Length: 145
Image (cartoon, rainbow, N blue to C red; front, top):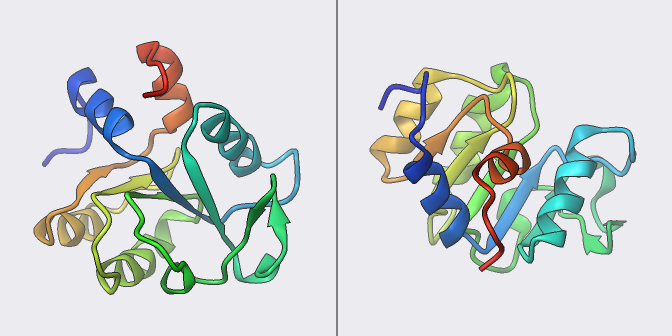
């Protein structure tokens, strides 16, 4: 898939069908974008799981933080990545080791690595890069399902 443009239908279906979202690179700092996005997603009814080894065992927005995706004791529908683009390939390695596999890999603004995306897509994941789910949600005026 080319990742220069996504149809509204593609984004809508993702945002309507995922329920559990792991946020890799979650921050407890209220001024960080990941904190705001987590709060937005929680407010829309998603189950959000923060992932950050530096905060493991603590809470962000009332949610327990895990060090790694593999530490999360439940299935994940979507992995939302707040890490530099250069680290996306390592995140994809972690994602592809999960069972069951998440349905979606989402890279936040400036998080784009076409080779990593191709690996995820080859394994059956839908991929969105260089986008923010809260921004897309607002632009598409979706309602929590």
